[in-house]
Image (tube, rainbow, N blue to C red; front, side, top):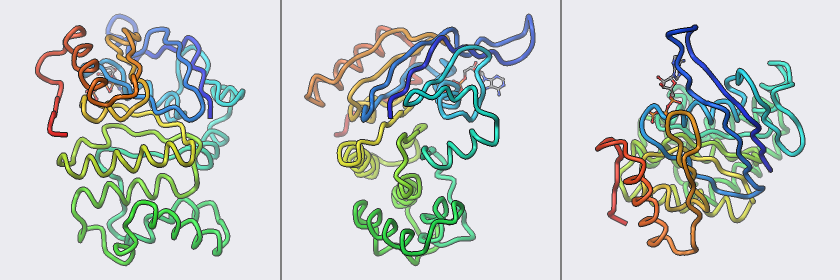
Length: 256
Ligand SMILES: Nc1ncnc2c1ncn2[C@@H]1O[C@H](COP(=O)(O)OP(=O)(O)OP(=O)(O)O)[C@@H](O)[C@H]1O
């Protein structure tokens, strides 16, 4: 899906104590792009993702997805839109401990009251694609952190969302698990043409994207486009991080 962000802004708090989290950002993300969003802590990455995903309303501006302005939808229609067209992966996984792996993964389809045959077909497809079929009957507390994040990815992708939102998806993972997850995200991006928006502090994680935008103090500061070589792209991302600053908070893992 194509996303056009037009002049959005968002303040938190009131008047003199207000935090200007997003200041008049405009942005275009093409169908099937894998976009990284980087920037120092507090730059506005999560707020930007939350507004594009309609989890938060901007104070001003428009979010146009495949020609439809999502800011014009009522809350109930936004919820429906999110459920049908969007998938989410968070650093904290957000899996339900009371359900097993299969029950977690099929949840978005079950909530939509999809028919049983479709649920089984999509479940088998996702579990095979992400190579976790053998985990189907496990409880969540029997999984490693890396396995939990792949299961969370399967759940996010089971209803073939047009847009996948990932907020620090590798933040809790060791580098091996992170690499596995990122390879799967890239596979889904290429095979299903899912548009992916991913906020991250980590240059290695961002190097899987096709383009990375850098935000600082609520505005887009710059962007770097993947030249088709991940090592080179990684270097370019590191250099841009140095230019922007942000101190030692940037988590730069180079063990790829
Ligand atoms: N619900 C809220 N109420 C008040 N201020 C908020 C709220 N959410 C975000 N902010 C503020 O808005 C600014 C942007 O926050 P945001 O979480 O988007 O940054 P971020 O780039 O995702 O940061 P991090 O990398 O630390 O997660 C920060 O100054 C933050 O304190």
